[in-house]
Structure formats: structure tokens, C-alpha cells
Image 1 (cartoon, rainbow, N blue to C red):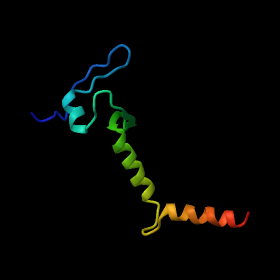
Image 2: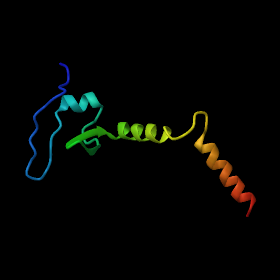
Image 3: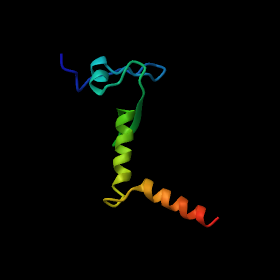
Image 4: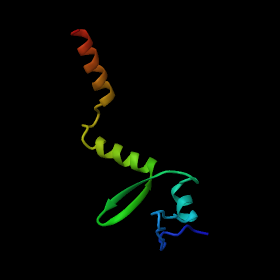
Length: 85
């Protein structure tokens, strides 16, 4: 059975919301798994942490010139600082 892409959910008095198992499975979220919640244009968006991390990495990468290794840059800066000590 295909996972649902839409569901009407109920918010419990304590604020909890149950994400249907088909949606959790489609997102690869195990029982007890964690998600990131964010507000986007007046809506709550829940996404797996791995996806949020990947999106953040892509965002940061957009500011790094092609072919530049930030790790190599940091190592070079640390070595230069150590040489001046």
C-alpha cells in the first residue's frame, strides 16, 4: 500500500501529534526517531534530521567557491598560526 502524502491529524491536549506510520516509513523515520520542526509560510514542516542536516550543508556549500576545501583552509590557517607562536 502506498504511503499517504496527506493526512488530517489531531493535536492532543499536551501538544502531541502522531505522524501516520506510512508517512514515517516513507521518510525513513524509525519508531522513536527524531525530526526537525520548522515554520514555513505559516505551516509546520517536519523533516528527518538527516534531511535537515543535508539541506544545511547544501546551503553552506553554496557560499564556498568551487574546488575550495574548507577543511584544507582551516588546516592551513592553524599551521600558519602555530608557526607564528
